Each structure stands twice: as structure tokens, then as C-alpha cells.
Length: 215
Image (cartoon, rainbow, N blue to C red):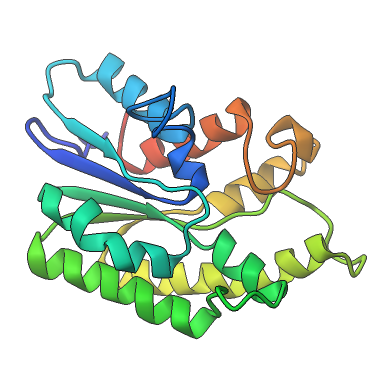
């Protein structure tokens, strides 16, 4: 049995899009009402003696380009010991819809790598990378959902590549949801494929904590 990876006195920054944000800038401040809040509460309950500072810097609608543009102010200035990143679904959605703000896979790789390089150079923080995910089983009807499921593999491949390159803790969220969809319908975890309900957020939090040796 390993020791939980977040240590006493450390600072942890969670950054990403709406799945990370989850209302943390409104009535559900400071952590939102999603996987970040669940993870923070479970860590606090299990390790109350560890004085860990948690920061949620998710912003709904963000792509990796948005993260790159705010990386100094919202990540580096906190001097974190850990940085947890989940981003990608807005990047690919906008590409498929022909939106100029879309971020295709090669640009996604470049900007994501820049964020991680800056983190290592400026803070030396440990990294946690969560795969973007899509909670659907529609793989072959030619619908928009089936196109997303086909395209998301290219973004996930980038995260896998970067996780290996930077020695990051890698949380395979899409893989986990696809495994669960063998036993449950999608709406058990999500009213639509992008934004999880509380059960879906618990899956993310559990998958994250499992990788951090929370037990």
C-alpha cells in the first residue's frame, strides 16, 4: 500500500473547463459542486492532519488555448506543488462545428505542452492529467455524438503522450466511463455526454483519488 501523494503543507491547483469549474465562481465557491469538491472533501475526511491548500481554477467554456493565456495568473502565481488539468472537449467540439475558436489536435498538443513546460520550469510542480471524456455509446449512427466519440481519441492520445513525456499521474477518465457504460445507461452519469451529474463527478473523483493512493 502506497502513501497518499499529497503531502502536508502542499498546494494543489485544479484547472480546466466547466467540468472543473462547476459553479466555483458563484454560489458554490470555492471548489464548485463537482469532482474537485468531492475530491477535496474526501481528502479532508481521510487526512485531516495534512494542511493542504486546494484551489479550483476551472472556467466554463475554456479550451487549452484559454488555459495557456491565463496559465501565469491562474496557475503559476500560486506556486503549486501539484497541478491537475482536464481540458479538451470544447477544443474538439468547436473544431467539429467549424468554429474558428476550435483547437485541432496538433495545436492542442503544442499549447498543452507549453503549459506543462512552463509549470515544470517555473514551479517544478507534479502534474496530474485527466483525459477528456464523452459519456455516450453512439459510435456508428453518423450523428454528431458518434463523430465526437471518433474524434476524441485523437485528443486522448495527446494526453497519454504528454503524461508519459512529463511523468504525470494519468487519470483515464474516458476509459473508465466507457467501462461503466457496459453496465449502466449513459444518463446514470450524465444528462448529456459532456456535463456529469453527481454520480458522474464521483466517478471522476474516485478515479483521481485512486491514482493518488488515497485509501
